[in-house]
Amino acid sequence: MTSAPWLVVVDAQRIFADPASEWYAPRFAETVEPIRELVAAHEGRVVQTRWVPPHVKHGSWIPYFETFPFADRSQYDPIFDIVEEIAELHLPHTVSEPTFGKWGEQLRSVTGADAHLVLAGVATDCCVLSTALAAADAGCTVEVVAAACAGSGDEAHERALQAMRLYAPQITVRD
Image 1 (cartoon, one colour):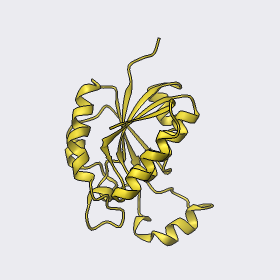
Image 2: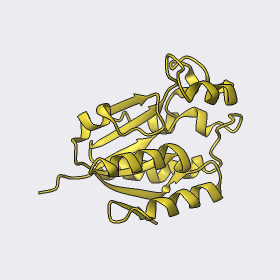
Image 3: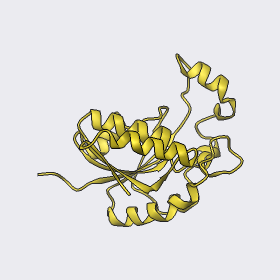
């Protein structure tokens, strides 16, 4: 028997919502109401995630932070906070990871190994995509709610959704 799905709100953080940020997702504000509706529909089976910089830069993270030095801050910098419209929902679980994909030991410990995950958040073309692929590869059933996701731009958002559609039936995109 399959258990009820878990909503994973991926990286609804100020760094993606702030128009002054280099990582601004232009349609971020449009995801807030769909995310709030999804939270209400998932009755406490909700995890929010946060991207935080790694404490120690290693491997490919070294040139990454040379390219994006503005993001090389303390993980406690307010830019990495969840936006107020989502934070005020007081979601029951938070997973902070120094990786784009959030599927890993922390998320698995909350949802279970072969979970049914419903993904929303930002950026469709980075953290949502990375989370969806890793979770599906690990055996999870993944649904991506397109209206509750925003990319770095419209074209990147659509390309990421198209890529995830290629993984059916493990990943489905709800339009």
